[in-house]
Amino acid sequence: MPSDAGIKVLNPTIEPDTDKSSMAIRPESLDGVTVGLLANGKRNSAELLRHVYDVLKETNDITLGVEENKGNASRPCPGDLLSNVADSCDVVITASGD
Image (cartoon, rainbow, N blue to C red):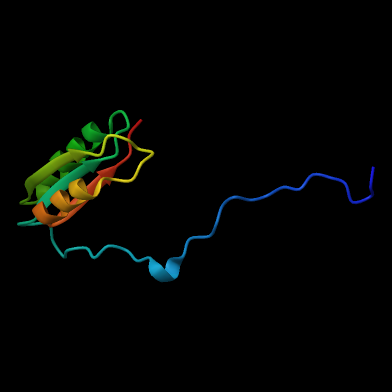
């Protein structure tokens, strides 16, 4: 066996490109805001979002715009679904269940 034989370990991850990423702009208040809920398709994600909305509704004057479920946590959200949520809501809350 050659002296340079061994196991080569590769790291398939990358560091995030923070230069192209930013936090979403948050409103100063939720009063008068239309909220959208976008579940990722995992079990209990829609229920979790509904609970968060109900808690927020107790102390804020918010309206529910749309409740959507992208249906598959391992795939990107379809463009038409994203457009519908973006066009219908001021703020969107997403969640992952399990």
